[in-house]
Length: 155
Image (cartoon, rainbow, N blue to C red; front, side, top):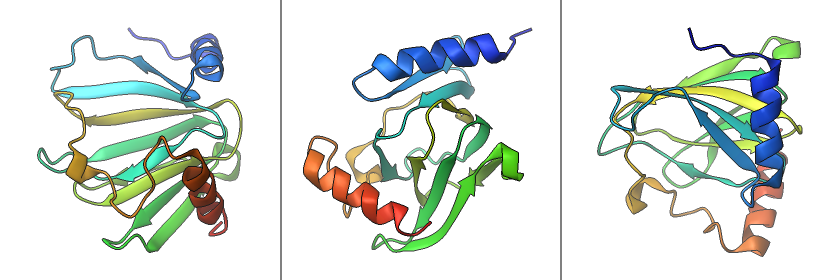
């Protein structure tokens, strides 16, 4: 049995806090070509999860928040926020399932946030056309900060 406990969450969070991207995965799938990818994603405020979708190959994605607070956004093709929800287990909001091809993104609201993520395998890096063209590139720190502030205004 693969066990998910506070120690594992704490260890993964500690690695996220010192990561340049302020997030860290802990994979439960043993090979990248497993038919189902399952992982913890420990994320800290300030990490930029660029809005994206999963097409070519089409993949549904499930997020279950184990601790912390994270905002989940759904966008239209022009970048307009269609829906947002603050995931917070203490408030009874636990996660979301995103269908393939739907633009989505996350904004981390609390230190120590950890999601359990499930999506179809095998692992395939996102192709450029799966990153939202209306969102800033990760290396543009000023634009990213402004964009994340704009997203927070929807909450």
